[in-house]
Image 1 (tube, rainbow over the protein chains, first blue to last red):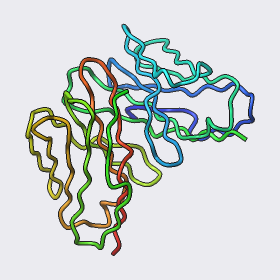
Image 2 (image 1 turned 30 degrees about the horizontal axis):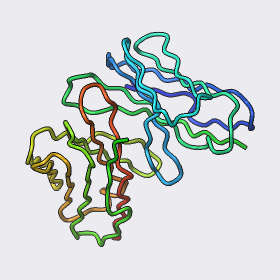
Image 3 (image 1 turned 60 degrees about the vertical axis):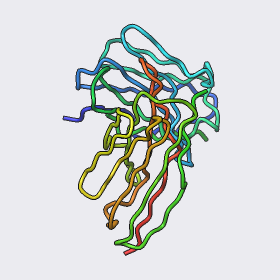
Amino acid sequence: DTAVSQTPKYLVTQMGNDKSIKCEQNLGHDTMYWYKQDSKKFLKIMFSYNNKELIINETVPNRFSPKSPDKAHLNLHINSLELGDSAVYFCASSQQGSNYGYTFGSGTRLTVV
Amino acid sequence: GQQVMQIPQYQHVQEGEDFTTYCNSSTTLSNIQWYKQRPGGHPVFLIQLVKSGEVKKQKRLTFQFGEAKKNSSLHITATQTTDVGTYFCAGRLGGNTPLVFGKGTRLSVIA
Protein backbone atom coordinates (compact mmCIF):
# COMPACT_ATOMS: atom_id res chain seq x y z
CA ASP A 1 0.00 0.00 0.00
CA THR A 2 1.25 3.46 -0.88
CA ALA A 3 1.90 5.44 2.30
CA VAL A 4 1.23 8.91 0.86
CA SER A 5 -0.74 8.96 -2.37
CA GLN A 6 -1.45 11.94 -4.57
CA THR A 7 -3.79 12.26 -7.50
CA PRO A 8 -3.52 13.08 -10.27
CA LYS A 9 0.10 12.36 -11.14
CA TYR A 10 -0.04 14.72 -14.11
CA LEU A 11 -2.32 17.70 -14.64
CA VAL A 12 -2.38 19.89 -17.74
CA THR A 13 -4.82 22.77 -17.70
CA GLN A 14 -5.43 26.18 -19.16
CA MET A 15 -4.79 29.51 -17.50
CA GLY A 16 -7.69 30.76 -15.45
CA ASN A 17 -9.04 27.31 -14.58
CA ASP A 18 -9.61 26.04 -11.05
CA LYS A 19 -8.13 22.67 -10.11
CA SER A 20 -7.65 20.43 -7.10
CA ILE A 21 -4.95 17.94 -6.15
CA LYS A 22 -5.79 15.25 -3.64
CA CYS A 23 -3.55 13.70 -1.02
CA GLU A 24 -4.15 10.83 1.34
CA GLN A 25 -1.85 9.19 3.89
CA ASN A 26 -2.38 5.84 5.59
CA LEU A 27 0.45 6.18 8.09
CA GLY A 28 -1.63 7.57 10.91
CA HIS A 29 0.49 10.74 10.91
CA ASP A 30 -0.90 13.82 12.58
CA THR A 31 0.54 16.48 10.27
CA MET A 32 0.40 16.94 6.51
CA TYR A 33 2.13 19.36 4.19
CA TRP A 34 2.18 20.74 0.70
CA TYR A 35 5.46 21.64 -0.96
CA LYS A 36 6.05 23.20 -4.37
CA GLN A 37 9.12 22.19 -6.36
CA ASP A 38 9.99 24.45 -9.25
CA SER A 39 12.08 23.72 -12.33
CA LYS A 40 15.28 24.40 -10.38
CA LYS A 41 14.29 21.71 -7.87
CA PHE A 42 13.75 24.19 -5.01
CA LEU A 43 11.35 22.72 -2.43
CA LYS A 44 9.21 25.44 -0.91
CA ILE A 45 6.74 24.90 1.92
CA MET A 46 3.24 26.06 1.13
CA PHE A 47 1.14 24.78 4.02
CA SER A 48 1.34 22.54 7.01
CA TYR A 49 -1.75 21.32 8.79
CA ASN A 50 -2.74 19.17 11.69
CA ASN A 51 -6.08 18.97 13.41
CA LYS A 52 -5.19 21.96 15.52
CA GLU A 53 -3.19 24.34 13.45
CA LEU A 54 -2.82 25.56 9.89
CA ILE A 55 0.48 27.20 9.09
CA ILE A 56 0.50 29.13 5.87
CA ASN A 57 3.60 30.38 4.11
CA GLU A 58 2.79 34.05 3.70
CA THR A 59 4.34 34.13 0.25
CA VAL A 60 1.75 31.70 -1.11
CA PRO A 61 -0.95 33.50 -3.12
CA ASN A 62 -4.43 33.24 -1.66
CA ARG A 63 -5.50 31.50 -4.87
CA PHE A 64 -4.09 28.40 -3.17
CA SER A 65 -6.10 26.90 -0.36
CA PRO A 66 -5.71 23.66 1.60
CA LYS A 67 -8.76 21.61 2.47
CA SER A 68 -8.65 18.84 5.04
CA PRO A 69 -11.80 16.74 5.46
CA ASP A 70 -10.01 14.56 8.03
CA LYS A 71 -6.53 13.94 9.39
CA ALA A 72 -5.69 11.46 6.62
CA HIS A 73 -6.42 13.87 3.79
CA LEU A 74 -5.08 17.26 2.76
CA ASN A 75 -6.20 18.48 -0.62
CA LEU A 76 -4.87 21.50 -2.47
CA HIS A 77 -7.26 23.74 -4.35
CA ILE A 78 -5.97 26.31 -6.80
CA ASN A 79 -8.13 29.09 -8.26
CA SER A 80 -7.44 31.05 -11.42
CA LEU A 81 -4.34 29.13 -12.44
CA GLU A 82 -1.41 31.10 -13.83
CA LEU A 83 1.55 30.05 -15.97
CA GLY A 84 3.87 30.49 -12.99
CA ASP A 85 1.96 27.85 -11.07
CA SER A 86 3.51 25.18 -13.28
CA ALA A 87 5.61 22.99 -11.01
CA VAL A 88 5.64 19.67 -9.19
CA TYR A 89 3.55 19.70 -6.05
CA PHE A 90 4.44 17.27 -3.29
CA CYS A 91 2.27 16.23 -0.42
CA ALA A 92 4.01 14.92 2.69
CA SER A 93 3.13 13.74 6.16
CA SER A 94 4.88 13.32 9.48
CA GLN A 95 4.25 12.48 13.11
CA GLN A 96 5.15 15.12 15.68
CA GLY A 97 7.87 13.99 18.05
CA SER A 98 8.99 11.18 15.78
CA ASN A 99 12.64 10.63 14.89
CA TYR A 100 11.53 9.77 11.40
CA GLY A 101 11.24 12.47 8.80
CA TYR A 102 8.62 13.36 6.29
CA THR A 103 7.09 10.79 3.98
CA PHE A 104 6.48 12.31 0.58
CA GLY A 105 3.97 11.40 -2.07
CA SER A 106 5.14 10.80 -5.61
CA GLY A 107 4.19 14.31 -6.69
CA THR A 108 1.76 15.96 -9.09
CA ARG A 109 3.27 17.61 -12.14
CA LEU A 110 1.08 20.61 -12.94
CA THR A 111 1.45 22.30 -16.32
CA VAL A 112 -0.52 25.46 -17.00
CA VAL A 113 -0.81 26.39 -20.67
CA GLY B 1 12.32 34.21 7.22
CA GLN B 2 14.48 31.28 8.15
CA GLN B 3 16.90 30.29 5.43
CA VAL B 4 18.86 27.11 4.93
CA MET B 5 21.74 27.51 2.49
CA GLN B 6 23.24 24.51 0.76
CA ILE B 7 26.36 24.22 -1.39
CA PRO B 8 27.42 23.27 -3.94
CA GLN B 9 24.40 23.41 -6.20
CA TYR B 10 25.90 20.83 -8.56
CA GLN B 11 28.67 18.29 -8.23
CA HIS B 12 30.02 15.99 -10.90
CA VAL B 13 32.33 13.21 -9.75
CA GLN B 14 33.99 10.16 -11.21
CA GLU B 15 32.73 6.91 -9.79
CA GLY B 16 34.81 6.04 -6.76
CA GLU B 17 35.50 9.65 -5.78
CA ASP B 18 34.16 11.14 -2.57
CA PHE B 19 31.40 13.74 -2.39
CA THR B 20 30.40 16.27 0.25
CA THR B 21 27.49 18.69 0.47
CA TYR B 22 27.25 21.43 3.10
CA CYS B 23 24.30 23.06 4.75
CA ASN B 24 24.20 26.29 6.78
CA SER B 25 21.42 28.00 8.64
CA SER B 26 21.10 31.61 9.69
CA THR B 27 19.54 30.47 12.95
CA THR B 28 20.04 27.64 15.42
CA LEU B 29 18.14 24.53 14.42
CA SER B 30 16.36 22.10 16.71
CA ASN B 31 17.22 19.32 14.29
CA ILE B 32 18.32 18.77 10.73
CA GLN B 33 17.23 16.13 8.29
CA TRP B 34 18.66 14.87 5.03
CA TYR B 35 16.73 13.64 2.02
CA LYS B 36 17.62 12.12 -1.35
CA GLN B 37 15.59 12.66 -4.48
CA ARG B 38 16.34 10.46 -7.46
CA PRO B 39 15.72 11.95 -10.93
CA GLY B 40 11.98 11.92 -11.57
CA GLY B 41 11.30 10.77 -8.03
CA HIS B 42 10.27 12.24 -4.73
CA PRO B 43 12.36 13.15 -1.69
CA VAL B 44 13.13 10.20 0.54
CA PHE B 45 14.13 10.62 4.16
CA LEU B 46 17.68 9.53 4.97
CA ILE B 47 18.41 10.62 8.53
CA GLN B 48 17.74 13.09 11.32
CA LEU B 49 20.40 14.72 13.51
CA VAL B 50 19.40 16.31 16.79
CA LYS B 51 22.37 16.68 19.10
CA SER B 52 25.14 19.25 18.87
CA GLY B 53 28.21 17.71 17.20
CA GLU B 54 26.33 14.53 16.31
CA VAL B 55 27.81 12.20 13.70
CA LYS B 56 25.88 9.35 12.14
CA LYS B 57 26.85 6.84 9.49
CA GLN B 58 24.85 4.82 7.01
CA LYS B 59 27.20 2.56 5.07
CA ARG B 60 29.18 4.96 2.83
CA LEU B 61 27.24 8.04 4.01
CA THR B 62 28.43 10.14 6.97
CA PHE B 63 26.25 12.90 8.39
CA GLN B 64 27.44 15.60 10.78
CA PHE B 65 25.65 18.27 12.79
CA GLY B 66 27.73 21.24 13.87
CA GLU B 67 28.47 22.17 17.46
CA ALA B 68 26.39 25.33 17.19
CA LYS B 69 23.57 23.43 15.47
CA LYS B 70 23.69 25.83 12.55
CA ASN B 71 25.49 23.71 9.98
CA SER B 72 25.58 20.16 8.73
CA SER B 73 27.28 18.05 6.11
CA LEU B 74 26.73 14.85 4.19
CA HIS B 75 29.79 12.97 2.96
CA ILE B 76 29.65 10.02 0.59
CA THR B 77 32.74 7.84 0.34
CA ALA B 78 33.58 6.14 -2.96
CA THR B 79 30.51 7.24 -4.90
CA GLN B 80 28.59 4.79 -7.04
CA THR B 81 26.21 5.40 -9.93
CA THR B 82 23.35 4.54 -7.59
CA ASP B 83 24.20 7.66 -5.56
CA VAL B 84 22.99 9.91 -8.40
CA GLY B 85 20.29 12.34 -7.34
CA THR B 86 19.67 15.56 -5.47
CA TYR B 87 20.50 15.68 -1.78
CA PHE B 88 18.56 18.07 0.39
CA CYS B 89 19.15 19.19 3.91
CA ALA B 90 16.13 20.45 5.83
CA GLY B 91 16.07 22.27 9.11
CA ARG B 92 13.53 23.16 11.71
CA LEU B 93 13.62 25.96 14.30
CA GLY B 94 11.54 23.97 16.72
CA GLY B 95 8.03 23.34 17.82
CA ASN B 96 5.58 22.60 15.05
CA THR B 97 7.23 24.71 12.38
CA PRO B 98 7.56 22.87 9.06
CA LEU B 99 10.91 21.90 7.66
CA VAL B 100 12.74 24.47 5.57
CA PHE B 101 14.66 22.80 2.78
CA GLY B 102 17.99 23.83 1.34
CA LYS B 103 18.14 24.23 -2.42
CA GLY B 104 19.77 20.85 -2.79
CA THR B 105 22.97 19.54 -4.31
CA ARG B 106 22.57 17.66 -7.54
CA LEU B 107 25.10 14.84 -7.74
CA SER B 108 26.16 13.28 -11.02
CA VAL B 109 28.40 10.24 -11.02
CA ILE B 110 30.35 9.41 -14.14
CA ALA B 111 31.13 5.72 -14.54
